[in-house]
Length: 318
Image (cartoon, rainbow, N blue to C red; front, side, top):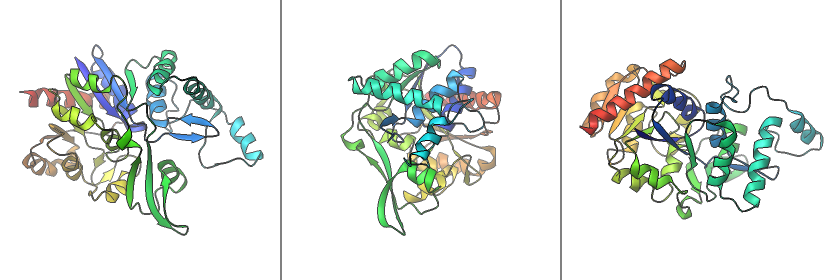
């Protein structure tokens, strides 16, 4: 079976680990969010792509969910000694190597999709990882604080400001002029099932959907599209998804996120058992819905979630 997954960072990567355990013989293509990408210290940093690559390749810092295991911070300390910022975004020594290789290859003329394939040759993640676009797309957040009304890069909003300032709008800068990376539309067209893991619906999956052609390809695909709620009991399982959901006028509930995606995109939706009461309303909206445990406490629990998503896909396929 050919499975396509639209994925952000930590939540998407951990779900993919469970999916691989649940479907070991299947062909998995991951369309990764690049809206979180940022240029730091002259280097191109792709946090979501790297988190997927490191997690599936066995190099992730398990407790953090991001960055490299057994990391050291000598370069960061030296940059600080020189007074070079930003100091709110930490890149470890091992992680720097990935960004140096990526930046060198991009400067040599290779597109991001080819660079990602080359990086994955080392890590062997067991999936085909494709960036959503080779073009530069960066998610910015419109805020108003002591410095006035301004747009900041999503990483600054998330990491430096800790999403404590109200987000007034989410802006996928460059998305409207971007093209899907080679292989993205083909993977969707050839898929047997498409999954939305419990990634951020606004700045992870939402940014992928903002690339022209992706949403239409999903709507026209023969494959059923099934998503898993990142909201459990009215709160994000991880991160601050409620902050960006509010910016686009969506309540932080499992049912509201399903309706945000809509029946034109979703065929099926899984909510946690804590949100079982949301099932009837989601189904009334035209989306098949089931309540199952959605806490990724370990690989087996995550594999059970993946199996439930695949089972719902078969059910809606008819």
